[in-house]
Amino acid sequence: MSTAKVIIVTPAPPGSRTGNRSTAMRWARILKNFGCQVSVQTQWDGKPCDLLVALHARKSHDALRDFRKCHPDRPALLALTGTDIYRDIRQDANAAASLDMATGLIVLQEEALEELTSKQRSKAHVIHQSIPTCLVPAPPVRKFRICVLGHLREEKDPFCTARALGLIPDEQVEIIQAGKSLSRGMTHEAKRCMRDDSRYRWVGELPHWAAMRLLSRSHVMVISSKLEGGAHVVSEAIAIGVPVIASDIPGNRGLLGRDYPAYFPVGDHGRLAEMLQQAIEDRRFLRHLAAAVWRRRSLVTPIREHRSWQRLLKEMGFRPA
Image (cartoon, rainbow, N blue to C red):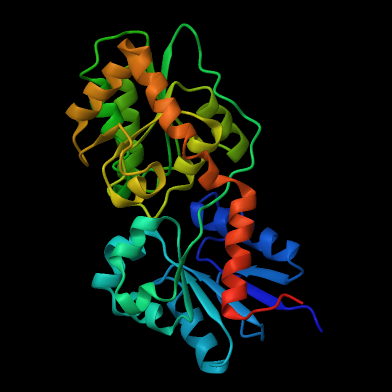
């Protein structure tokens, strides 16, 4: 039997440090380990393959449509992003059509299933993103460090933590924010925040290893997003064991659990400041968060993600070789 050919389509170009590109490359490694011949592309190049995996319902719509037209008898999986699930499938006709065209759907956390119709759920599979790491928490002694990781764009509400800092009087607190600015306005705001408060520092986009080192050397990570499909950085915090304070959205609850003790309402920097102040003053609370994160660690192990892919391929009747 010949080697199965798989094409993964992601809108994120080579060299990009976005979550979509990281997911595509990790899945490519997993499928190669299964014996597949894998190619990662930004659009389907028209070459035949045995399986298409498309990331992003709206941006990969053309690739999915063309592949299904040319190969109606071959499987095509669609991985749904946060903007897909919580916005585009209700507002964009192409995004909605992509869900119907795909033979299988992938979501990154269980709560995303609630946004799908019963027909869509019947072909949906949850695959948690895995994080292989040997890092352990090692925060500084003299400072209470808060990190914020992610590109500066509207959906992330990137300056919610900076606004919260203005309500925290402790001079031994610092916020380090890492991520590429995606607009002049975001760059201007980051620089303004640094001018207004020396405890806040924006360091721009970091290589992945440096971002993970920053995460491991922080007392707590804040994710303030308005929507997420299942943020990779939350999985990374879980894998390392770094406490998280998160906006109360389905994408975060699906990874951290509905009973996780540190959610704040989206955009509510006052409530975020209260939680951060509690973490600064009450180390028992911080240990409680660390324990809650640790209990979720089994979700993000590489072996679990491998097995999830094995089950998915088996259910589809797809044989790598």
